[in-house]
Length: 376
View 1 (cartoon, helix red, strand yellow):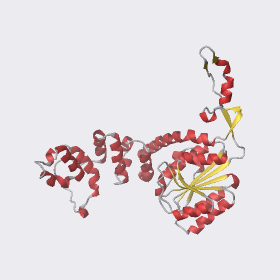
View 2 (view 1 turned 90 degrees about the horizontal axis):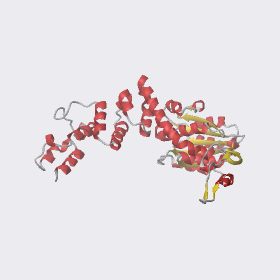
View 3 (view 1 turned 180 degrees about the vertical axis):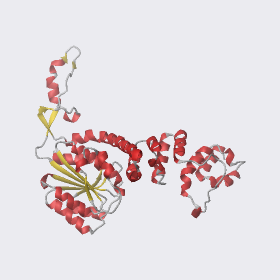
View 4 (view 1 turned 45 degrees about the vertical axis):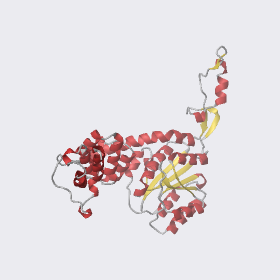
């Protein structure tokens, strides 16, 4: 076995393989060329083992002084490529609960702002105070603003109303391009010598904004399993809020209901108000949402939940049927994200579908298209 192969096996098997591997060749831990890698990975993954597995950690031996979380993170960033660092950070937070990554201001600010970090901040925000909390909010804003930029253009295109060919549009998008008008108005620019059509101005159609706006009511289950959906629901609600064609209401629920409609101007404020975990009372949420409905015929009620009801399911079904019987459209989202991995109560989903609700796990842009088909 080559030294490189042997070293790779040693990294995989850990310190307990020192003695068996040393029998394979003249080998000792001191000549192990991946020593620093071994130390950094061991700092994280040795947490898998304890005396109950028959593993007793050595109290002394080779290597540098005891690592701290900031020291470990700094060395990891120098030694590993960015993709590997993100994996190690994610497992440190998700699998091993190394919360120092989020409660130390300097360490927190050194982390890569991404969706995974956003989710962990929302889970640990209750333990953050002062400057650490301020830094966390800045990271949340950075990630959310980037997410909103990605979703907003397509959402506006889907929901901006029917085309109005008699009014010039200010939204310069391919969706609104009036090709016939553009050609006719630019015929004077035809270059006969080069036989080329020159366009010096594109013409776009406006959009008809309905006088009687549709009302979108979004009820979001804030249980821990719905975290991705909570994030996307908050961002999409803030986008809907900015559209003149829609009136938007948003509330989150566990066993209680918290209406966040007054905070939709800032999705960061919405997310930092969410308290993850706790029980689930879907029937109560549906009944609260029912009180927000003013014109059922122009109301889209969106329930974002895994449908795991903590109270008698019959009350949940009765509330859902009352919303449908009143004339509102009910969309039950078992997941709202780009992963599509939904874990939900299948019997409850079938029951809602049988009573006339639309049930799906969809992406945010698909939600915008669904609403657009109805309001337009």
